[in-house]
Image 1 (cartoon, rainbow, N blue to C red):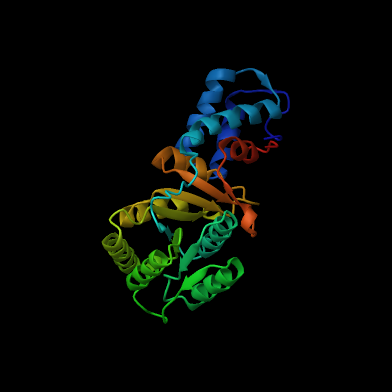
Image 2: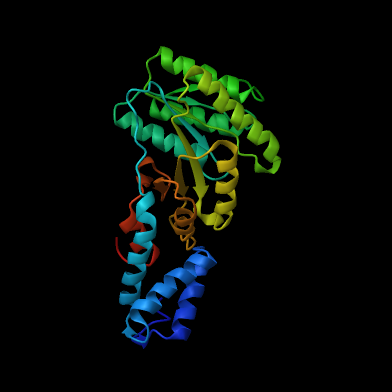
Length: 284
């Protein structure tokens, strides 16, 4: 933005450069055009500084993402409160589960983890390590076991032990879409036999660095099992965080949290103003 505006008029050429910059941030072509059009309407042919442009952009981003800024609320009447965590392999799904487990444990909740990605031994081992670190029971089965059966077993254990929360990890093999859809839908059906309201939250984990691919993933997983909320990971150090704006505008799915690092504290509630100001290069 600094290179485009330095006490320069907001003319057609400047707006075109700004639009290209927003597209490069993965905001999407249509939304980038909409945002620059709003600037044209309110500030066209005025002399503007980089700070003024950043401020105006931030306000426009806030307007777009504020409606989806919703924390993940637990329902204490549901025991266990079941959170089904979905997303492609490599999106940060298992790490997100670990961070949520840590935060819930620190808040005094009893948490059970279910290693539902039964075909990925590394994922099961990773969850077991996190279970030891966070003091959570981890329910596992031998490699290749039925994921739905494991989810049901984990639910029954959590209910028997009066645990507050059950976090279920799942497979994310999108190259085999039909099998994955069948597996996830079976998990949901089995959970509903145990509790007709379960899962109480279906959390889609998306990796910000994948840019517009996040749209395809959101579309696929919505079709498979429905999505009640999003966690966007790897927002630290990426210039492509604009994809969150286009996701908010297109789908209206609540964005519960963002991941900005590796520690449990780096999974933060999504805050529209802080995100918008960070996206355009302003201090939160």
